[in-house]
Image (tube, rainbow, N blue to C red):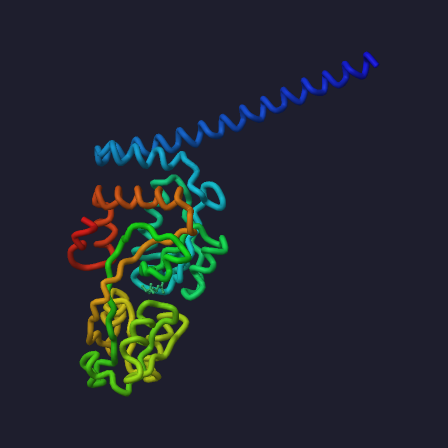
Length: 296
Ligand code: ARG
């Protein structure tokens, strides 16, 4: 009996030691992460001297960011929407890509892009496949019923592109036309509501397919976000941008509904990126002209 009690005591003591050792290990890990984050933030302070904002981000970075996997921010996107997101030489590129990577860097996490069809991005986000969706995604009331949006990070309108020799000069000429759009986009909704039944709206899964259809005379026009329309028209000898429609859209980064930790961290970082003019640097890499006032 005596012997057995001693044995149990010894086992309990050994277990206690083990638990203490593990806890110490964990504590070490946390310290290491803290140091890394502090170092990064210290560098930032040197650059822009804006202590208030940096402190805010420091706190966010060490907080739980509400990511599915710690340290990795999985970003879902339809990577076929130049100049916002596209793949070139096997690499993700574009304004959204640069912006998201900058946010990730400041939060001390690795951004991993997952390419997917635009029409399923928000359901996939909701189902936990990504931590965010960044895809030139317009903030709409309807979408905000299923996901939460960051503060706006870009302002855009819609535009119509046609074959330069088509004789179509604007939306007043749409009677009888086939107008190509990308399915599930705000452009598709606008075209359906405003151009039908005069014109026929033809949906394509991706934007490139819509432009290919235009180039091969399967549709008469493409109706799409203005910056994407200009990019396509500028890069082509045969296409022309003939109309701009003021839809006053704003793009936001979507997170799962209720993921306030991630949303707050993204918003604080976005504000910092605008404030220290990094936004302007990224913007001028992809667009001509001045940065819209709200992002200066
Ligand atoms: N801004 C439009 C929308 O939110 C089009 C976005 C399309 N984005 C893309 N990566 N294909 O509906």
